[in-house]
Length: 250
Image (tube, rainbow, N blue to C red; front, side):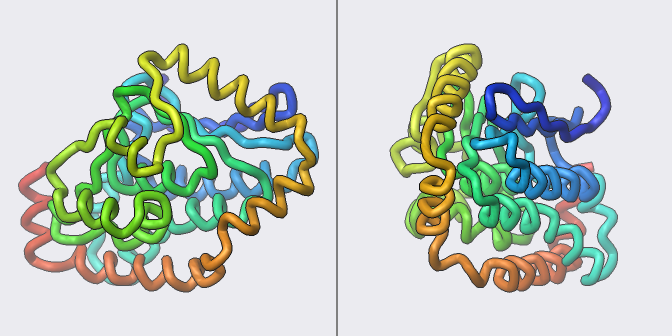
């Protein structure tokens, strides 16, 4: 695998959405846009009862947004569009009328933590450590913050947002409520995800749709909220502090 992609495969009424980028699944704007649209399309597909969200490769679930695009931001408007990428994915997941099961096989950083947090039920391997690294470069996890806080609580979210250098282990994420189960191997994870998703397909789709509405109650303002958060990040990424930090990482 060397080319980025987003693909949807349907098996036994389960829609498996998989994204991939060779740079540790760090996602550029076009892939994020395609991912958001694929989630929306799967939500409207009558052949799909449950969605599984996964990434390609073995080591990293998602390393956040594309670093190459980040360092090339030179104005606030471009910055807002860039940081809206993960906002659009999270909002697509929030609005999707079907349960989304997360399959997290490895480390996840920044926007990837937001995506995992926006799933309705998330399983992982013991290698799936999480980190919110945004403060390291002079911004913050503003866009993904609402989704992460919704799963980890304000205390858990603020802990990993402030401690931006540390990977928190999968077991910690499970204790905080992000992961429901943690497995020793990817093979065991995949088997559990498949069994769980297919079992959900036996339930009343209307009941699951109504349950999802209840689970996401109170987030109706997220279209506007996440756009505002993207604008904050778009402004901060232009600061001298952040520009120097990004240059040092080249």
